[in-house]
Amino acid sequence: MPRFSPQPQKGFTDFFPDVLRVHRYVEEHLRRSAELFGYEEYDGPIMEPLEIYAAKSGEELVREQAYVVKDKGGRELALRPEMTPSLARMVAQIQKSATRPIRWYSVPTCFRYERPQRGRVREFGQANVDILGPDSSDAELEIFSLIRNFMESLGADGKLYRIRYSSRRYLDALLEHVLGVPADRTVEVRKMIDRRDKMDAPAFEKWVRDVLPENAIADRVLGLRPFADPATPPVADVPPAFRESAGYRELVEFSRKVEETGLAGVAVFDPTIVRGLDYYTGLVYEVHDVGTENRRALFGGGRYDNLLELFSNEPMTGTGFGMGILTVKLFLETYGLLPADVGKADRKGALYVACANAAQRGYAFEVAATLRREKLACEVDLDFQKLGRQLGRADGKGYGWAAIIGESEARDRTVTLKRLATARQETVPLADLPAKLNDLSRGS
RNA sequence: GUGGGCGUAGCUCAAUGGUAGAGCACUGGACUGUGGCUCCAGACGUUGCGGGUUCGACUCCCGUCGCUCACCCCA
Image 1 (cartoon, rainbow, N blue to C red):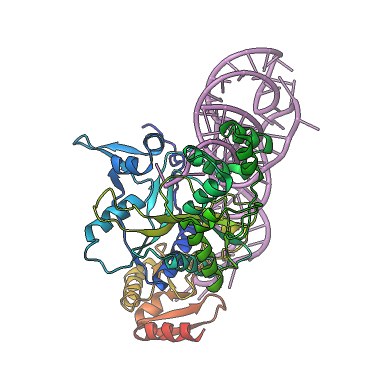
Image 2: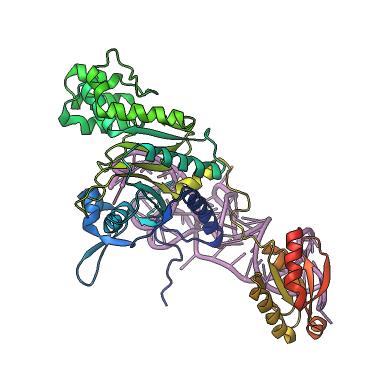
């Protein structure tokens, strides 16, 4: 027999029970926050035709990073690298009948063939929360509130993270009217602004001057520093055309709303937020750790106006984010926000059936069945000898109670009910056991 | 695709060219129906793999594979 490696594929994860519990902890908090805001859970196929990703996100990325499967009909399917195209497809089906806004969330497993590193693996859980229909930035306000609620529920206050937002339209207006960047180079200059902090200064300057040989423009781009208030970019004279642009007005108004809503503590304008692809058309946002430990964005999102264009003639706008379960988990670990017992099963109210003699195993199973009928969790030790070992296992697994069974208990149809933490025990008739356990658990 | 770090028991790690070890975990015993503590014992290894240098390699050299961190990218 050949021996295979017990390790999972690179970038894939074996979720052992203690690891899975941590994962679920993050997921469940997200679900709870989403439900609190009225969002409904959906899910879609784990594979979609390759083309719908290619159409959305560019051929090259898809070829390099998609897991592609050819089915028996010769169709090329991709393991979903993201949820949004499936969301769009599904929404297109119910677009005419659904009550708006559509508030949906999902917690899919997604796949990307990339080189793994901290916070990034090939198979990953990514929560998605989207609100579709309203074109007002009140939708973004709601999304920001939801993010704050989620982070607070995990014990992260506003000092530990920031929602940083900007807008495509604002940035384009800034480039056009304030910096004078020619239209044919806005895409690349956007990229520069996104990249500035990640490069060393001379390399950045060289890049800028290569792309913008006009010195005056290059100087203005190089002189642009991050600034806090979108209404006042730090340049000598702001042309009126900029202040009249839709991008300017939209973002300044949104910034004001953020203040009014009391979100200013966690949400800040940041002109360097650009977001990777051309996907987004309006407000964009990312959530970051304020520290340097976790440089990868915890959340990324934005507004898309053309979401449904692949599937429907009728446009629909929306905004939403994706959030990496793993990145949030790393964030929580960094700040010690995971409860100490998050990886352990909670069995404080559960009972362990310890039977000292194989002759009474039938009665032991009957006791367990009786409890389970009353929705009381219990586990039967299958050793049927060595009571000491059995109690040791019960303790090791964190059980709150043990039911000890031997000859006399089986004869009298009782159990010896023992509280493991205190070692106190008493004999209880089987018929009274469920009620007794419920009473004691409530009292403790 | 590029670069750094690391590969020794299930896990965390020692062993500076000279007999491969410890702690934790596991199994059993001390203790035949009463756990956590303690003590004793056991099982666990092709030192990632292949080659080279050497009387002798976990140790040094070359290659290779794997893991990891960063770059690239990040729908």
